[in-house]
Amino acid sequence: MKINLSRPDITKLEIKYVTSVLKSSSLSLGPKLPEFEEKVAAFVGTKHAIAVNSGTSGLHLCVKSMGFSPGDQVITTAFSFIASSNCLLFEKVIPVFVDIDPDTLNIDPDKIEEYILKAKSEGRGDRIKGVLPVHVFGQPCDMERILQIADKYKLIVFEDACESLGSEYHFTDNNTLKFTKNNNSWRKAGTIGEVGVFAFYPNKQITTGEGGIIVTNNDDIASLCKSMRNQGRNVDGKWLSHIRLGYNYRLSDINCALGIAQLERIEEILLKRENVARMYNERLKEIKGVRIPYIAPNVKMSWFVYVILLEPEFSKNDRDNIMANLIDQGIGSNNYFPPIHLQPFYVESFGYKSGDLPITESTSERTIALPFYNNLAEKDINHVCSILKKEIDKIKQTKNF
Ligand SMILES: *Cc1c(COP(=O)(O)O)cnc(C)c1O
Image 1 (tube, rainbow, N blue to C red):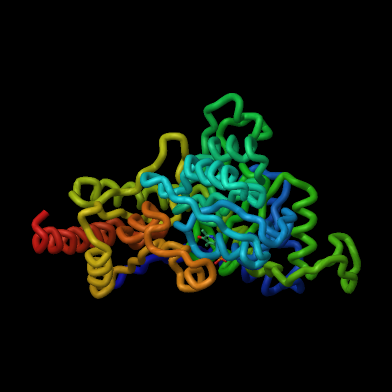
Image 2 (cartoon, rainbow, N blue to C red; image 1 turned 90 degrees about the horizontal axis):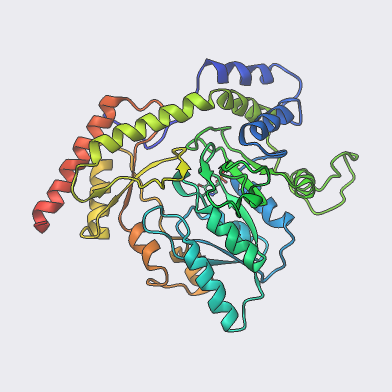
């Protein structure tokens, strides 16, 4: 028996919409692009949405559109997928990593402020220009605190919401509501900062095959991103007139049609994922040594992956053994995330070392992502949980805890 780590959920609707584009005369820059963009904008509640060919491309255009200079610093998290930090390096902006909250696994706002104060006291605070929170595994960061800090130190906030389409964050402080623009205390992840990015790789909540989308209420950022994704053409201009440096980051109508079908099913998709997570929680919460995902009280979760955390008495080696044994028995699993600052390229470029981010590192050594997708059957969840429990018991027995 083999149970994949993830699996797209493609129905007749997706096949119908994609086929109809294939039968049309516009495979790219046709009507499906604006239709997809309008539907995403309406779903998340922003004025603009600009579709691109990957989440990474979207993040790159965000960084470009905010006018950072080489050597500027943006505070972000190392407990993430590498693209959230690489997008800064593309423009020679320096990612500054601060540690995470051990419960939510998101960037810790106190650590952001600590870093700023320390840098300022050492006279090197003026290169800090932004904060890039990543809503890890679908859970929104503590955006209220992040916006307060950003306001205090005049930093721009943009969100890597690639894992969090559909998640919501609840603002509680009346003073912070001013940041939310429409005074609505519940806001969708990705729409809280100046600009946000969602991704549509096949393991995300919805997929376009490959793809991503930038969302913002800022007209200038939107038109810049539109131009840059299309070779720097003026948005309403001629085909061979290029007014700035641009890229080919376009998303084809074939991909957009797939996205439209997925988005029409978004409520069903989010519910199915929530249901899978609930079934896992019920089965795993009593196992000693396993911590099921912690969800903060002021968020609505859109589940991207299901990741358990082993308690600290388990070593990295124990975790790796459990994972290898799961894979041997046909159960997909992975170690989301190895920390970015310890990736070889980052160690080489910036000299990071073990111990720089203790919570990020100890978390990374104890996570196990389990099979997670919309149509994961209850019997498969039971199977995964019973094998996992056996593997954990084996370690507990040899180590006597
Ligand atoms: C998926 C993801 C991205 C973007 O990935 P692409 O593969 O380029 O679409 C960026 N950041 C995070 C945190 C992600 O999970």
